Image (cartoon, rainbow, N blue to C red; front, top):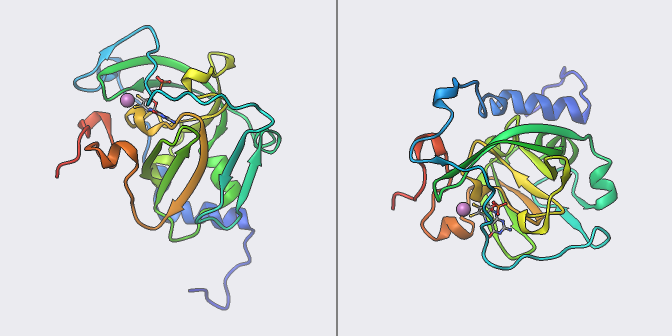
Amino acid sequence: MSSADETPETKLTLSKRRWAEQGKFLTGKTARPEADRLPPGQHLVKNWPVLDLGQQPVISLDAWRLDIRAGVENPVTLTWKTFNDLPQAEKLSDIHCVTTWSRYDNRWQGVSTRDLLDHVMPRQEARFVMLTSSDGYTTNLPLSDFAAEDALLATHWDGAPITTEHGGPVRLVVPHLYFWKSAKWISRIEFMPGDAAGFWERNGYHMRGDPWTEERYSDD
Ligand SMILES: Nc1nc2c(c(=O)[nH]1)N[C@H]1C(S)=C(S)[C@@H](COP(=O)(O)O)O[C@H]1N2
Ligand SMILES: [Mo]
C-alpha cells in the first residue's frame, strides 16, 4: 500500500529498499576462522570433479540466451552481448559438493546476482528462484540465497572461460549452498512467491542445501 506523501523513488532505490526491508542481504557468507572452513562430512580435493546428468550441451555464444521473464518487473531475454554489458564482478569462493568433496579458492568472474536482480527487479512477492539449464536440469533455491553477496553468474574460472564440462558459457555459482544448486549451462531464471522442487529436490535432496547444517536430504 502506498501513502500520499510517499517520496518519489527510482526503480533502483525501490528495489534496494525492498531488499533491505526483507533482510535479504543479511544471509550469505560470513568470515570464518580457517579451522572451520571445511563443512561437516566434507573432504578437501585439489582437482575439480565433473558432475552432471551426462548431457553436456555445447552452446555457441551467438546462440546463447538467458530468459528472465517470470516474476520480474523488467522481463528480459539476454544475449551474450547484453549479458556482458552488465557490470562485471570477480569473486573468490569455496565449492562444497553434496557427494562430500570440497575445493577451496575458486576465482570466478561474471555478473553478480545482485547486479542481475537490480536489472530485472523481481516482483515484491517473489521469494524463491527456479533455475533451468540447457541439459534439462532444474534446481530451486530461496531468493535470499540467490542474492548472497558472493553469488554470481560466472563466465570465467581461474582467468579463463568456463569449459563446457563445467557449465560454460555461463553457470550459476552460489558458494554457500551445496554445489548442486549452482546450475551449469543456465538458460532460464524464474522468480516465484512459493517454493517448487527442481530435479534433485524431487529425488530426495534438500530444498535449501546448507552444507554447514548438512541439509543433504529432504526429511520426508
Ligand atoms: N545443468 C546442470 N547443472 C548442474 C548439474 C547438472 O547435472 N546439470 N549438476 C549439479 C551438481 S550435482 C554438481 S555437484 C555441480 C557440479 O559442477 P562441476 O561439474 O562443474 O563440478 O553442478 C551442478 N549443476
Ligand atoms: Mo552434486
